[in-house]
Length: 211
Image (cartoon, rainbow, N blue to C red; front, side):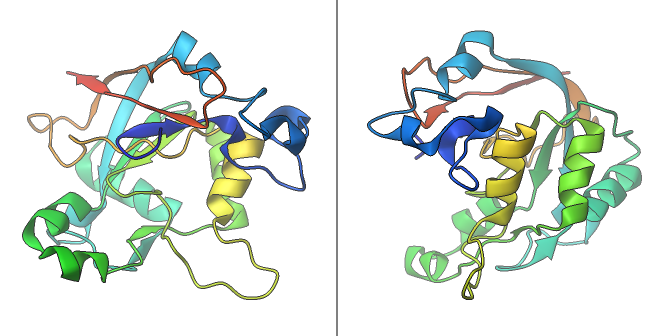
């Protein structure tokens, strides 16, 4: 369900044995009885989309493996592009990872992890909440840098485990067209509807950006 361009369901991860809206993690056994991809698929995702080109902002064709960025970098990229970030925008972030994939031998690509990605911080969680961001996606596997170094007691994907259950951010949209400028236009009408799959942790999606 999550091996292509996809949405993650809100029950894909949990925090302190609780899913989004306080459901018990036991409801995920054998399938997501709660917080599956189905409610998102039945309603679809529609809104104003904004593409923030982080690679272009840093003067690169693609970000390096393990290179990180913050929500402040997203804001700076949008400002450089001359596009206003508004509340409830659907954010797409381009790192150029697909360019790197096409130009790199297979063995070298698979040895190039971790991917570039978004860095977690308490400020990031507050930014999601205050801006009421419903959706963030990237041309990488997990939006945040992954896999990241782990120490005892450290969460492997903090942005995923925090933003998803607590802030309702479907995290793993990977738009195939995210690296393409829309004729110099960085905002657009965004439409996406993942497949309607009962009790699934995610679903394939074919997002559309309309100028």
